[in-house]
Length: 281
Ligand SMILES: NC(=O)c1ccc[n+]([C@@H]2O[C@H](COP(=O)([O-])OP(=O)(O)OC[C@H]3O[C@@H](n4cnc5c(N)ncnc54)[C@H](O)[C@@H]3O)[C@@H](O)[C@H]2O)c1
Image 1: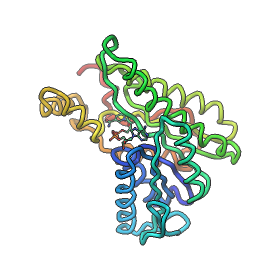
Image 2: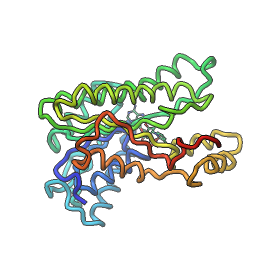
Image 3: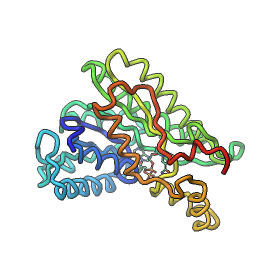
């Protein structure tokens, strides 16, 4: 508890899944959290869940100030939470979210670029629209986030950015194009910006999750001819015979965002139960 005390964190795509788990974990560690999410209803629901969870666990909250879920008033828990409708594909929308965060809680210390979508196609039958919407969210969205917070972080000489990549950034599954191309780009962006701003004490790192149990994964299974068989096939591929939980990615995000990782920069931590180290299926 309190590993992120006095920090302000903005998490994109925090309405559900890995982003929601990161927002909750950050709040439990004392951060003020801004849920920058396309689907505002899920973000508001997650904000309420965080307030309840922090009230239940007695988290004091950053600076011990009362919480807000929509900027409209204090809540009973110690958490500081704000939900902001945000489309990461639009630079102006992300900049608006950062301004809202600053107005509510102060300068953004931590950015988690988590929002992402699966676009899995055969390369030669993929449409131009498939290519564009994949890159718009999965790569442009990450850059839009970085560009919105970096000037302030550079000026203050402190900051941590965590980009949620994927093991698709290192391994290719046929028929999943162009998602891995965008995720390779996320690693490139992480390394480039990490080096660029290291002299100003701004760290930029990535997390590469393997299979994690979220709606995204369920949607993929449900899109297969036999969803139950697809799920079982996924589990059979895992060294630990299970897939990961969003909380297990969130733990790594807490570490990278915190002052416990001051010399980790331009790096990527894989969270996949060892799957990407396995040579044979
Ligand atoms: N679940 C996995 O197995 C897995 C594995 C590796 C990497 N990832 C990555 O983790 C991240 C989160 O994945 P998840 O499984 O939690 O997905 P999810 O679909 O459950 O959640 C993604 C969230 O992002 C939001 N979002 C989508 N487009 C957005 C936009 N333009 N602007 C703002 N928000 C937007 C969605 O509304 C949703 O709330 C993604 O970047 C994904 O590529 C997931």
